Length: 394
Image (tube, rainbow, N blue to C red; front, top):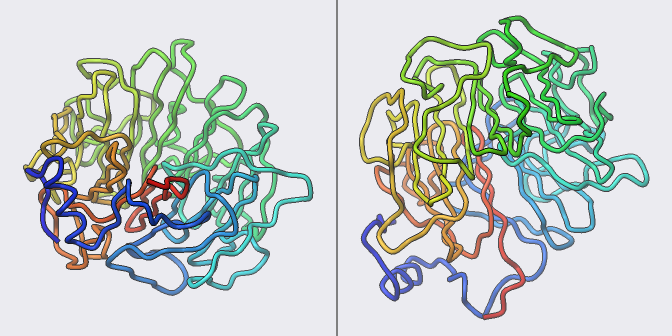
């Protein structure tokens, strides 16, 4: 695989074809229901490493894809949800604890429940979340820290309804989760590093309110190993939790915050992705309203996209390859991703677990093109999934 930082127009198209990747505008697009995924599952259960994109067939058109450390999820346009990967903690949601790597299994919701959305950034450790068409949120899998807000630490092998209504956004990672319900932000689970954002560093098995949003509505919530963040309707971005690698973006290092802090950026944010898989990594990348791109936090694997290695406690700018415009962003443990306006998937950063997707398991200092025909991407820890545009016919 070669870096594509300097390729443009027809040159990019020729290079993508030479690499064996399907062009987004090619006439032979797959039929309904295909997700590409690669990288490695971590956590309980068996390993399943894919160093280049592999396809999973689904029984209908895919609306959204989501990832956890151990499992991939595909929401179909008919409101059903499918999962594949590790199932040792019930995260497949099919009532058992067996793994399923070769086929997607349907998540078992009660009769009449249709799912409207799933978190794409991202799911808690060995745990899954989904929001139905009535604004109720459901959770299943690991609940050892109480991240499902049910007041228990029981595992759940099929989805259970959580104690919220009018849910508009949800995210989780590590052993915590954050929920936007009826215009108020709540967190549950582990609070060791302040990742609940409630002004304490205590765990919470029942909903703990996140203060400091100045009455602004939240448009997006994100989460990583021990951090969380909220994008407000006025374009401000606030985050909280672990700061071991400058993850808070406010110029500090190793000064974790148990309440939201605003990240100083030169414009309003329209898109945010947060990553990190342990207490010694973590980063955030954002897109501003004018299309400019910034990142901060851990850059030891070049995952911030600025071509430099190290810790960056304040936002630094990065850019797409020449002639390319990014439309969607994602970032995992120590690797970052983007889907271009042409549907090409780019990856940069750590690759040891196959998460770059170019087949060689080396660190990618610059973006490499690894897939195409995509509309969105989700990444957690070492696990990546992309939704393919199955409707294009040239």
